[in-house]
Length: 124
Image (cartoon, rainbow, N blue to C red; front, side):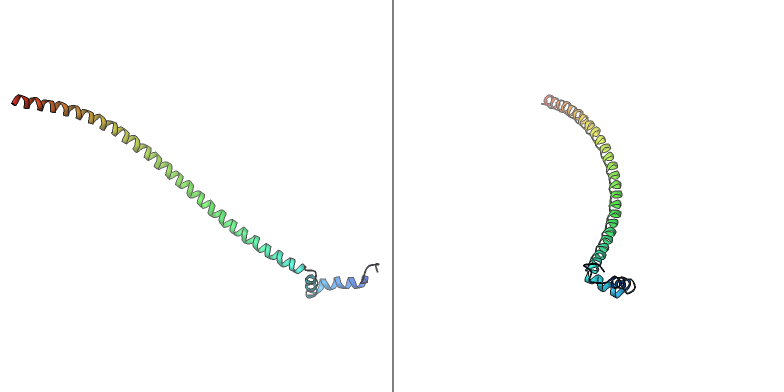
């Protein structure tokens, strides 16, 4: 027996053997040592980690889906931009033609107006 030991070697061996064989005794000792509370907390933490991992996995899947959709929308947007550029070019050409046509119409209108005025002057 050690100098500071309250229990004999045989008593300690008996306690350790009882802890191995008797689960209720083991839990009682663990409870007294607050080990059971620690294990319960660790179990709760483990459950929370598992839940967070599940949520993270769901978010990762959702993010992947959203990334695919963004890529699809980007492709559609590029196609629309190309079409818009084509339409803009088409309209610019038509606008230039319209300006040219307007200039011709104005010129012809002035000449016709001049002729009409000359006819009225001659008729007077």
